[in-house]
Amino acid sequence: MKVLVTGGAGFIGSHVAEAAVDAGHRVMVVDDLSTGSTDNVPLQADFHPVDIRNREALRELVLHFEPDAISHHAAQASVSRSVREPRLDADVNVLGSVNVLEVALECGSRLIFASTGGALYGEVEEGEAAGEDRPPQPLSPYACSKASFELYLRAFGASSGLRATVLRYANVYGPRQDSQGESGVVAIFLDRLLQGAPIQVNAREDVGDPGCVRDYVYVRDAVRANLAAFDGALDGRTVNIATGVGTSTRALAEELVKLVDEPAIVTDGPHREGDLKRSVLDPAVMVSILGEPTPLRRGLVATTEWFRSQVGAS
Ligand code: NAD
Image (cartoon, rainbow, N blue to C red; front, side, top):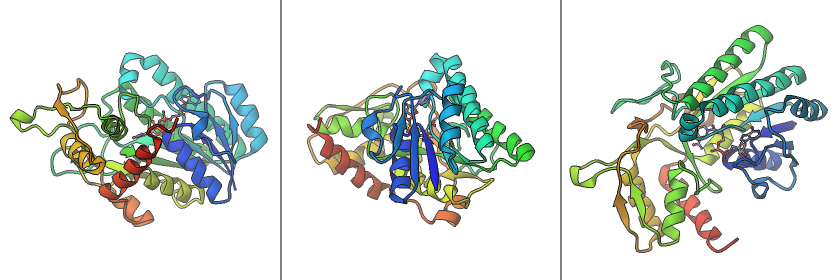
């Protein structure tokens, strides 16, 4: 099979590209390297430094390759940047994605879209987990752009027979996640803990606040979903990629401090403006198709090992 991974030099996309290579597929990666790195791209993949907003360059490449499946991960992936630069966010995540959609239609490729469950559903009440049928409540430009491209896929699925899958990722963590960004708290905490630097939980312990609650899903589970989608097992489906387990930032920090097993300083900070208090997704559909997600502790152990292996590596 021939697979195109957009954003394949980034965190999740590079894992998808690597797994596709391992599965024996021919892999092309398109990425403008705005946040990704060629270090992440598997050597066996054919890499092209192209911006998905460059319609003609993208079209020429993809028509030549004629992929059976396109795993679309290229995006402006930062919620806070989308608030600062909503036009840029819409430009990449809507118009760039429409370019990808057009070439998928032209080539008759399956299209797998990396959407967000973490941002799309808005606040999820204590005791609840958002299922795929919960109406989207986008509270950021990023969530708006992801939700709107989901609508394009639905419209083209109905009118043009596009075979599309929407994967709504919760908070994905794992090896290669960028630790220098504003999100990706597992990577940020691990990077700092391994350097002996303090980590900050944006909550006040003195009033018993554990911080934001998130559904942390291991990158391997996102990869498994992509591989299943390449084979058509998820055609026409929208699937949460999640664990259904809520973990507070403080509980995550405590777990990582234990795993790193070095002296650590954990400070309190102010709640970050615009952060959802609680986001937990229902993984029942995913579990019925792909089996159980990776338990948090197991994923964190593997991620810690990887970050440890990087200390002083570059
Ligand atoms: P990432 O920033 O590591 O990966 C995005 C990749 O897209 C980068 O390599 C970047 O260089 C590339 N890119 C950005 N703009 C581009 C453009 N105009 N043309 C070509 N390439 C471009 O982020 P990630 O965490 O790996 O996220 C991958 C996808 O998954 C994104 O679509 C993101 O919105 C989605 N997602 C991620 C999470 C998460 O927890 N990390 C959660 C939900 C959804």
